[in-house]
Length: 378
Ligand SMILES: *Cc1c(COP(=O)(O)O)cnc(C)c1O
Image (cartoon, rainbow, N blue to C red):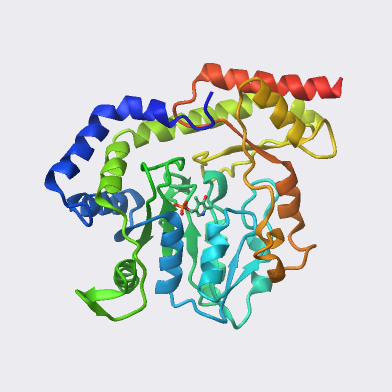
């Protein structure tokens, strides 16, 4: 069993993907070929945004968004420490300081109620993450940000395709930023990403920054990066969009089925297993289906992972150490800060997930997890 099975997806889409790749090889416009604009139009339509700008990766999307907003040395950006490192990395690269706000224990998303207390005159932006594929309390955050005149940038690297009160992830705030890393809900076969915005000036800035700050050939009006997404990767995402609606449905079905099957084991009721929460006004695209193995009861997460691996079931930890405890970032926060992020780092464990996971495989994961937790209890 694969943690995320991309080979099955390719097998299902092979004719479309191969034809798309061949077309790029035939026209030979490997950089900024016609597939780039075609994908940008499709992504803008999908998110309901005026502009979609493809870029070299999700990390690059975040960096370009903050650069377009003018984040610079001395500024502060409020974000969560319980995320992939790229979220905070881009802030530090610009000489600004990430200000870490703790997470809600049930969704593992930024606790929006704790944000206002951390706003200072130096705050330049708020950067929430839609972790595991679920948007955080966006309306509350946008209202708060508007009161303080601050832009919001959504890190939607894990949530492309998710909905919040009917609105798509990526459609909120000054910029939505996503990633097409192969294992994300919508992936390419290398690195890729995109920014979404409704603001013409910000879109123009992002397009210039993507190509070395160039406003016309060899005229560099601002500082930029080499941040384009190549034509082949755009072609691959276009081919995958054909099946994306079906994949989103599969993700909903399998996510709900995991929750039903795991609830039926009785383990959540005894406190040996924590299940992920999805708020009623939104959905989750389950970039990860992440449970908790409380460290105070039972065998502990590492033993559970080893027992599952012995039965051929891969698991992963997203993420073991919050960013304020990482060596490169530890100076930014006190060690006792963000206790819920620290606890989540000790407890979370992601199960095999993806549109091509079968019900039979899912049943085996649940049975194996039940087996090792019950055994430890007995
Ligand atoms: C994957 C990811 C990124 C970075 O995306 P890349 O395309 O790998 O650069 C940023 N933030 C989060 C939350 C991610 O999961």
